[in-house]
Structure formats: C-alpha cells, structure tokens
Length: 59
Length: 451
Image 1 (tube, rainbow over the protein chains, first blue to last red):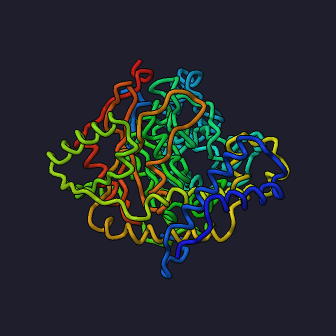
Image 2 (image 1 turned 30 degrees about the vertical axis):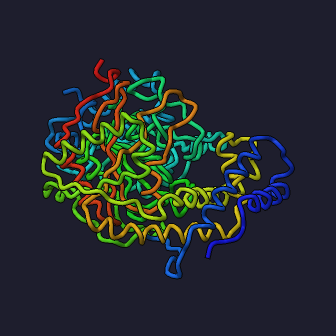
Image 3 (image 1 turned 45 degrees about the vertical axis):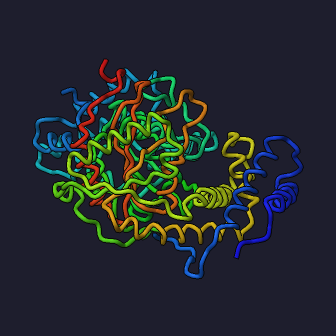
C-alpha cells in the first residue's frame, strides 16, 4: 500500500535530520539538495512492492 | 600499421609469433603517449621504468618459449581506483595523493598472471563520482571524455593503449566509452571481482573494460571473469569461452526499448538509431519492440538512494576526518546519503528486485536489448562528465551491458549503440556485439590520432 507521507513531509524530515547531522545551513544549495532527495524518497515510497521483492545481493 | 593501432588480440598474436617485441610495443606506446598526453591528460601515473622492465622480461621469456598467458607482453591501463602494489593509487582525491598500496586488486593480479604489462594508472573522477578529472576527449579537446573512467576512455580512444580497466556504479564505463568512440563492457554484477577496488556502492559497483574491438573486450573478460573468495559479491558461475563463442555469431534477435531512451535522446540520436536499426534489419537481425516495465522510471530514484547511502557509509570515517578535502559534488552526494531513512533505503533495494522480475521475461525474449548509449554525443566543456540516464538502468539491474561505436554525429563526435542482456549471458552479448560491429563496420578515428 502506498504511503500517505507527502513530499513535503519528507522535505521537513530531511531538514530536521540535516540540521542535526550536518549542522544548520539555509543556503540554496542545501535546500535544493533536500528538495531533490525528498522527491526521490517520495517516488520510492509511492512505488508498489510485493512480498517476493526481497532485497537480493546477486541478480 | 603503427604499433599503437594494434588491438590486444593482434598484439598478443604477434608477440607469441615472435614478430613483435614487447619492448618495441611498450616503447611505441610511450612515444605515442608523449605526443598526445599534454593535450589529453589521460594518465595520472605512467610506469615507464616498470613497463619497460616487464617488457624486457616478457621478451626474454618469448625467446625461451615461455608464454605466461593470453596477454603475454601486452600493455594495459588501469583506472586509478584499482589498487596496484607499489604503484600510486590516488582515487582522484587529494586525500590519496601519495597512497601506494601494498597489494594488487584481483583484476590487476589476473592481468599480470595473463602476462599483461601495467603501463600506468588512468585518471578517474574523484572517488569515481561526479567531480571531473582533468582529461579531455580525444575527438574534440573542448568536450568531456565522460566519467568516471575518464582516462581509460581517452587513452583507449586515442590509441595510447588497446585496453583499460574501468568501473561503473551508474554509467562510468559505457558513457566514457561511447563519448570516446570505444567499446565498453560492464558484465553482470559479481562476474568480475571487485577486491582491491576502492568502493563507491557495494550493491552497484561493477568492474568493466574499455577496448577498441569487441574481440578485445571478450579477451579481457576471459582473463578477468571468475569467482574470487576475497569478494563476497563474487559469483561462483562457470566462465564460458568468450572468444570461441564470438565465432558462433549469427543474425541476432534484438529488442528495441524506446520509452525514456527515445524521449530523452536528442533528435539527431533518434534519427541515427532508426537508420541504424534499418541497417541491422537489412543484414538479417530480427528486431522487435520491448516495452518499458512499470517500475523502470522509479528505478532512477531507487538507484540514487542506494548509491548515496552506500557512498555515505563507505566514506563515513574518511569524510569525518577530511571533509574539507572533498570536492563539492561528492561532498553533497555523501551528505545527502547521510540523511536518507533506512526504510526507504531498503525499499529502494526491493524496487530493484521488482524491476529485475519485470525485466526477466523481456530479456528472455531476445538476445539483447538495444538502445542508444547516451542521449547525445559528449557535451561541450570539462566541468561535468555527461548524463548517465541511459546506462544507469542496466547497472541498477546488475545485468551485462556493452557499448560499441556506431556513427559520427554532425559535430564530429562518436555515438554509441548500447546492448544489454540477461544475467551471465556475456558470451551471447559479445557475439551479438561482434555481429553488429561487423555489420556496421565503424572505422572512424579521432583526427588527433590520424594526424
């Protein structure tokens, strides 16, 4: 089932983690990085997976 | 024919026959490198003395009738993230500027066992990511050679060496190969050992080769493939006789995947691909369309998540100690990897598995999937290394992929044809590529090399 978490939720989550992990930074570069990462997290969360889709090391 | 134009296979054949001395071959390549290197900057380290010493030893062995292996006396280049015992390995980073490993990567050891001479180390982008190497494209000096195997692409494209090692986590073998007009092969994940190669992403890193012919790619794969107990991801799958399989080449079944590969390609690339498909069809290839699987698009996001998280993990300690010595792209790459929640990281891996399942029936239907290798020829400028959008899916899936030069764009730069196939079907992939190579008969060389 797709997550109800929005792209904005991911952005704010990343902002919090970034503040604690990397330190405060309000630069455009940091914001753009967080936006892009939030979008990717959101895309991955929206995509369906099934029970047999277990992570595999080898193809 | 000048010695620097010889292929690996031909050089090895002439050395075995006693008609070419490894000493003369190394001397000819070093002289050729001296002519072009000031413009191209393909090499971080040239081991002139070591290469000449190895060449003299190989020459003496030939005279005694001793042949170490299929690459006896043949020089090769090594991307500068592969550890080489006694030879500097910088990883394109100032942190490793003076680092000299005390052991060889398994790949380097296997090349030496096969008789190859290590000519030197080729430039890489910083830690095989995005911050460019100083290397120029041999087809046009103001254009990028691609990356991250930038030096290997330029060196092979400019005939400084007939074969070189590269590595690919997104598109770092096939893209520089296509931009520099060479063959590039990235086999199945686990096919070639990664032991002794500085990692970027454990689940995505692949070792590959850059050559000027498909036959040479087959020869290098023959030497490099096989299980290695030092590498936990190494596959214990039997290694076929790739060179013998090349001879079985008949008109292949090719599946054309359009979707993103045609939507993102420049109009000129689309048009050239359609012309090329007509030529292959006329030569006997059976060509059908392959649909793009449902999860294909999200694969890009999943790939980036896995790559960044694992890069952050690989660099965790080093980054804490030397953050100021990392260049901007890799720094933000690692920093973003530190932020990604673990649930999404695992979900990205599950999406990889899902896409693998979705691709399986399509790959089973054909000998190879065919696409352009890049959306456009090598971009102008040396500030970036081009877009990996067309090479990334096959890396993400862990399946073998190969590029071969197929045409020249209007701006005089080469275009590549990309083939991908089911896991561990490199023998068939190489045979298909050989058939395409013969059919398309691409013989162009950079003007720099002709002059």
